[in-house]
Image 1: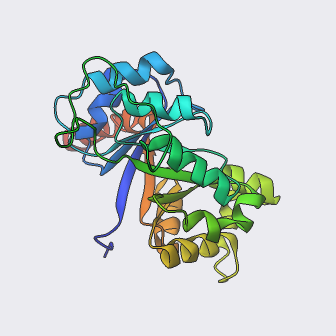
Image 2: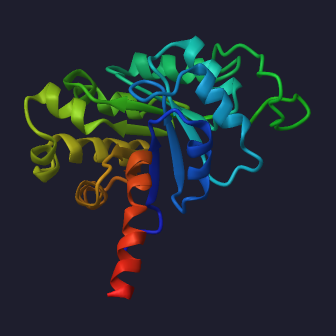
Length: 243
């Protein structure tokens, strides 16, 4: 039985706003717009978020870099949070949290994009955004305990493809290494000790299952392209009934 604390997510890459917005009703628990390796440029992110009429599930943006302008822009457009790539140290994680936070906690500039209606209280500010940072290098792995302990951080998110490349191994070998001192168990333990979520990118049944068994509780199980391709399964079911 799946731990009820586990939440499975969809990862959008196509950059098509209506398709991405529809993922909120896919039955998955959260959605990421990929502005680093996907086709989500600034316009596509804004157009996708503008289509939201109600917030069914958290919608995050994986920004291109740990940059205050990019982080603030995604949040100003209405994202519920950000995933920041290539975080190698606690100082990098602190910079990401500061970029997402208004003073006095951070350095985020106040200026939501026109049409953003979400507020939280009399000061008119939106709620505190969800902040995740990606550990996907050997340096980040070595610093993961300090990264996870940064105040205001919500999740450490593993990019297993980049991490395996940096460590000179394969994704499947990384997933199969269950020793307590192995990379993925170390990350899960650091998150547990710090009281933050452990997330990972595993868009296949086999890899998502392995990551969940390792203790990750926020796991990407599908790409938008996979979900679209899955429509062929409906035709197969009709063919089976007609046979």
